Image (cartoon, rainbow, N blue to C red; front, side, top):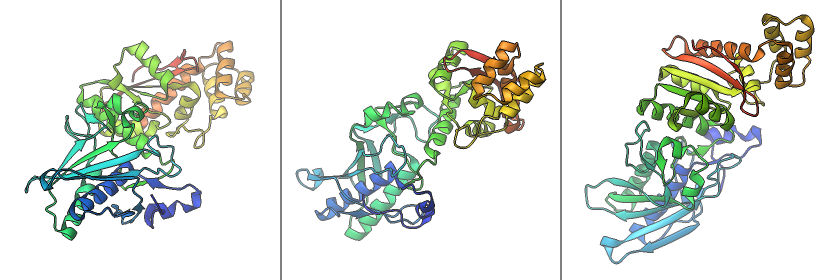
Length: 377
C-alpha cells in the first residue's frame, strides 16, 4: 500500500499524530480490481487505485499476482495486497489479503466464495445468511462497484466469481470474536468507510452489536456484558451462560446498554472489575482509563451512605486505588462492593430508558472473587 487517505476522515486525524490505515474490505477490493483487470487485459495494474465510499482514492501495491487456467473458460487471476492498518492495534495488520477472480456465464452476477483464511457464517443473527462467506455487505457492494467499472472500461460482462482469502487467517481469527459469533474457518472481511481510524474502537463496538444479534437469534434471554476474561469466567460459574450469551464489553458499557435498549433481551448482567464498575456507578459509560477515572470522592460518599463514619470516608477519599478503598470498607464492615453494584445497575437502567430489560451487576476483584452484587431490577 502506498500513500495516506486523501481528504475525508483520514485528513481529520492528522492532529492526533496517528496514521490511519485501510480495512480488510478495502484491501480485498483493491485485489479484486487488479485481478479482474488482469483477467480482461492480461496485465495487472500495480499500484492499483480504488475509490472508497467517502471519496478517497488510495493506491495499493500488489504483493502477489498470478494468471492461470487453460483457455477462457478456465481462466482466473489472483492478486494480493498486504493490509496496512496504520497505527491501529488491528490483529490483521500485515496480513496478505488475496482475491481470485474467475469469469462466470452471462447473467450470473457477482458471486462470493470464502477461500483459505476467510470464515463462513454458521449462526443466524449476522448481516449475512448462514452458509455465506464472511464478507460483509459494504465490502461486497464496494467490490461489485469496482467489478462493474473494470467491466465497463475493458469490455467485460461483470459476471464473476470472487474468492477472497487471507494468509494465516484461520489462525488470526482465533484472537477475534469470530468463533463466538459462529464465523468459522477464518476472518471476516469488514469495513464501512474503507479507512481504519486508529483507536476508534469502532470494530470492537460493532462486535458487541453483532454479539447481541447472535444471542437474540439463538433465543438467549439472558446475556452478560463482561469487562474481560475474569468476569466472563465469573458469570459462567454463577449463571451457567453459554458462550454465545457472553458479550466482550471491555470498556464500552455504553455501547452494550444503548444497543440492548434498541434490541432488548429479557435480562442483562453486567460483570466486571470493581474499579471499572465504580466508574459506571458514577455515570461514566466509557470505562477506559484514558477517558474516565475512579472517583474516590464518589466512593467516599457511598461509604457514608453504607454506614461508614467520617474517618472511613476520609480514608476512602485518600486511598490510592479503587480496590484499596474497597479493602478499607471491607475491613470496616461497609458493603462498598454492593453499593457500587447497585449504583451501577441504576445507571444502566437510566441508559436503558425503560426498555424491557432486567439488569443486575456483579463486581469482582482481580482474582475473580465476587466482591459486590445488586439485585435484579
